[in-house]
Image: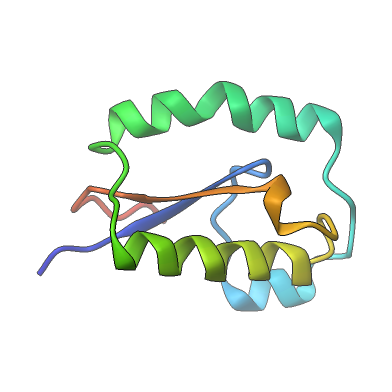
Length: 91
């Protein structure tokens, strides 16, 4: 079975729901945003590229909602959420 990984550009952290709930609400800084933009191409290269289609669209919608609910930003468009084409699991 293929396993998928979400990478969120901006914070570049993959957090569990428990970690998100426990994390203090803090807005994403311009430095965080820049770091995400710089690292996103490398993540795509290292983990098989981006997937497309319904699953990727769903991941983007959900990932952006989670990011907004976390308090990082009030606009989901501030985030790039990518469903990676990889069988590797990163913990």
